[in-house]
Image (cartoon, rainbow, N blue to C red; front, side, top):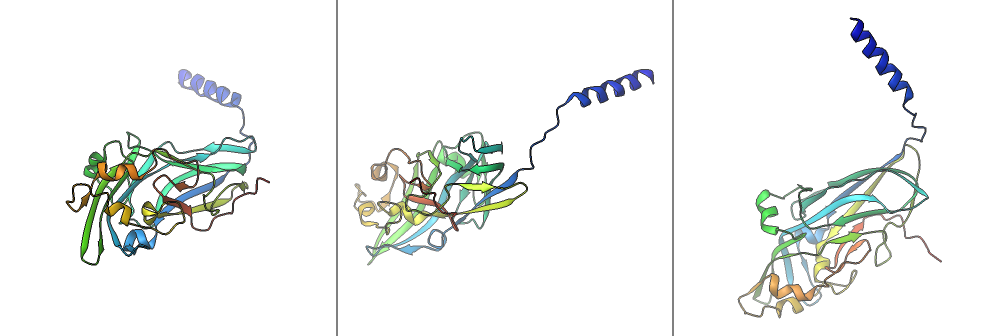
Length: 254
């Protein structure tokens, strides 16, 4: 009994030495992602191809804040999700907390031990992708000609803080206890555009079918994409746009 009392007193004494956290309660920023209508339902390109995705799998996550003295960063996420956006609805990507004048970031990274299975993703899909962060399967047709595409790409890309075409998030002032949602839209149709915001074109992919077997594979399409990513809110070099649906507007740097 005496020993228990001593332990209790010791515990109270140690607890009393801990510093109080005097910071204001942070804002909560929830990132969600959903597919564009074209990603889910298919689309027609500017050069007349009807394209449909059977699989459009993308890693997305590792949400946090850009380094800044004006932003108090309380939390970030260290993991990402593998999501098949042909089967996804509105999916959670990450929840972070901060205060002040903050700029957000997230990433599409190669699959690793921190990759979690999201909507439509399976262990078999993850294993099939290996180190890739994008997996695409589907079909394109035009006037009786049929081209299937079936490839994975390794293009790890940091996303943030602003969209290439002027839409999206740059900075946001976060208030104590504020709840903010950043609704991202994944536009898979941008995979076939030369630049973000351009209309998709499929002909250059069709002619990349070097063995004329009607199926576009990794080796045949790899050279059509830039080898590195841009530090923007687009998934350019692939052209896949990851964009806030209702962006806060890019700040004018003067």
